[in-house]
Length: 186
Image (cartoon, rainbow, N blue to C red; front, side, top):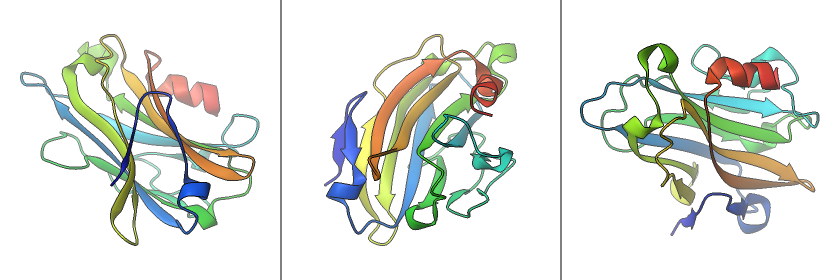
């Protein structure tokens, strides 16, 4: 049975799942009736200084794979229609560059500002980590907040603390757009 986290909750993958090697990060949401949105999952792989070591460590729909081969985006879902994960990020933990200490999973609404869209138009949003080998869901965070002014949300992050990987349920909404994250972390 998966561990269900609340906002700010932590799960130590290294201690509680020591044999874990390859995970997929499933991100899901439903668009509320009457709305049409294109949400995009992006990953920022950060070094100790809080920046991406090079542009290719920003993994998204136009750069599907990190240069170390450890993180791969499986593609853009433009509608969010259907059950299950809407976008998936694969991560092979042993291949991660030693320089990477944070992996942020951000969901943005494409052209949110010009279309006057925000996360209050989304429901049933979640992030989950699944062991690829056993297809077992390890941890899940259901975003209970509505985020009425946010145009993007950091769903969660993998962070290295004292050499151990932890998953943190972030649930942090902003109005900076994807470019705001690029400006902050590049």
